[in-house]
Image 1 (tube, rainbow, N blue to C red):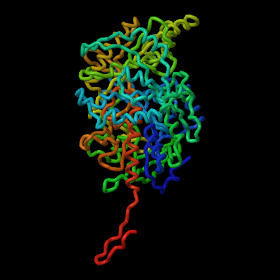
Image 2: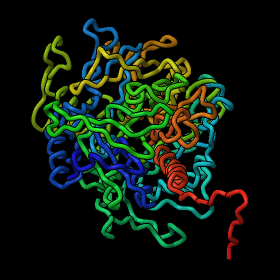
Image 3: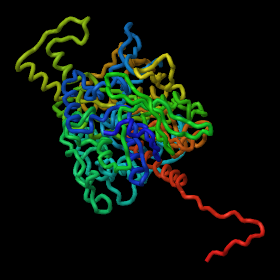
Image 4: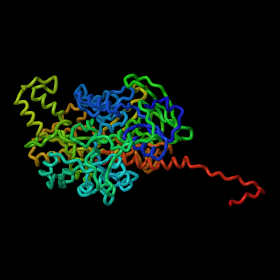
Length: 637
């Protein structure tokens, strides 16, 4: 295990801050190209051993609330925010924030992330849809948010590369036909699609070809259930790579670890059989040019008087439960910060670098998730398979985006788990246990009656997740204040967060669509948004609540000019030619697709520029003799 003292005094070609998905991919590619790469990870790397995985599984099993960070032990030196840190206000109106993040915005930012080796890629759901071509030009085409300096065509090759690294399972023909996504001719995903759930098939039978009305455009939208691409193991596609097939391998040349998906229903937060991709699988294929130091909290990016980044300062600790650390510095030709949108912004602000545009920390985004739920007329078999295998995709696109935010309508395979805490809440209800200490205990049922009623209710549960695009707003931001520090003395992130009217109109339109879908299904809708929930707000005469999707984006957005963006199209800082800020924080818009695949594609694209920069720095100089007046230079043979 590499420790801080073993890298003291060494100089590297590249330092990568953060061993999440983006940082891991950057390190692998640069190491493969022969560059000496040091990766500094704030968290521990206990999860990259089989005993560590089993410990995480046992921690998850014993957790009363199965939230995304439930399997991962708390770390005082490098704390992670939790979705449980946002609570109702004590007076019943609004919210209060506890834990690592400091929140003082109109609405709570309900998204968490993980500071550990592998980062948030250890608890992501594993869905890998591509962005749509129109998502890159929302300002030009629809009049809101920010445009990208690049387009879908610029990422096409890197999407394919990212899908190979992750091992994406899906059906390109269905994606092209149902969504209109362009693919290279003959291209297929590395693995065949994850089979649609029984619920998917029931909804396709009942809804495909029927239409619902958009209240703002007064246009009918046709319904069609479409299978979603996944970053998890299925059956390798023998047609992949021109018929050579797909066979992911480890550094030892052995098949990569992880079984095929067997439907354990705990993708978020942890896959027991490791069928889901996580960054540790890529780290298994790192070569010896890449060095990882965990328990290394980068506290400052170092900059010379000429504006060139020289390296980083970091705090090395041994015990995650004891905030005692020693400070070290390390130098490199290029520094890549890939520490999550919020942590990257926090580090840049604390270092006072890369912010001549005053855009660092601004434009914080997520996919606000509006949940709706009901009981189907018959059994539909929830709680089997990944959290979602299909969705309705037509709401992601089109001119309705001029009126309101678009959304992915995700079919949830896990019943009312997210919406109402099922199945535990169902057991409590039937046992007469109130959901509030201020309510009286109800009448309980036991024995066969309890089992029958539980089976009937849980087996008919259906829920939808409306994951809305959030537009870039400069007022949604990360800042720091020296009054708020963590256990190591580093400034904690302060968040100001709200939803624009464009998003709230999207929620109004989505709720209307949900009502229509439940009616078409003949389902008993049970959607209810309590006014004392932390995220409750009112809009257009109705009340809503929303959840965070875990899709933190923005905060160091890319653009075509240094005055209005933080990085250029290569994710290179406008202010510092040898500083790259790689991750979802570079995205100026997020569309409606889960952002991990796009983040991976952007990271692989940046590697090409980083490699070119390093080649320029290390190109040998051609020395020629200085001519001396009156002296004839010898001729070359």
